[in-house]
Amino acid sequence: MVSDKTYDVIVVGGGHAGTEAALAAARSGVSTLLITHNIETLGQMSCNPAIGGIGKSHLVREIDALGGAMATAADKAGIHFRVLNASKGPAVRATRAQADRVLYKAAIRQILENQPNLQIFQQAVDDLILEGERVAGVVTQMGLRVKSRKVVLTTGTFLGGRIHIGMENSSGGRAGDPPSIALANRLRELPFRVERLKTGTPPRIDARTVDFSAMTIQHGDKPTPVMSFLGKPEDHPRQTACYITSTNETCHEIIRGGLD
Image 1 (cartoon, rainbow, N blue to C red):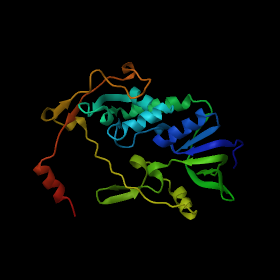
Image 2 (cartoon, rainbow, N blue to C red):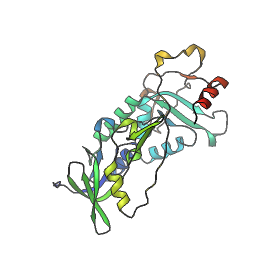
Image 3 (cartoon, rainbow, N blue to C red):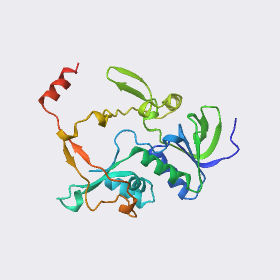
């Protein structure tokens, strides 16, 4: 089965990189197709619900200056803003936002769906269309062939992904989503260098089981900072506090006791 439309750019993967790549291509005036496993998880934050911070907020600002969506979405989803290193010089200060993950992906999806020249298609990509030594499109899981002038792969943790929980492991992408096994195998067949990246995520804790009185409360900054150059504090949802805790020797003994 062959699509009746040829695109200028196909972006595979709808995470942080994929959404920005698709938006950038569409803004430049070329026909763009964003293919994602699940439209409901476009722009979903994988683990750490923070945007910005030391060594990262300047990247968010650079994306924002180039017309990207991350800073705007952070302002619409941020529930706790702080300027880190505020007592030091401007060169080392960094704005960090703790974001509501549901609000963040909703903001990203709204931006994507209102972007001219951009179409979104829900399907896994299993193969690439090759013409000589040139990539000329993709083949989806259901066998649909879609041709394009350029293909951008932004598959993140899905490409041949494995999840390790304790001593158990299984195939999977972000937060247990289906992995991209066929595409990973196809890339290994081609003359590409394919390596693996390990990332870790902390456990999720039910707030109803936490004694917050034993922790140190940390409020966001006042006045509330913004992430985007065009952002306003009025863009923010209701703000909430964070809580600081620390480990002790008993905690360290439990960790050491669990190591092989």
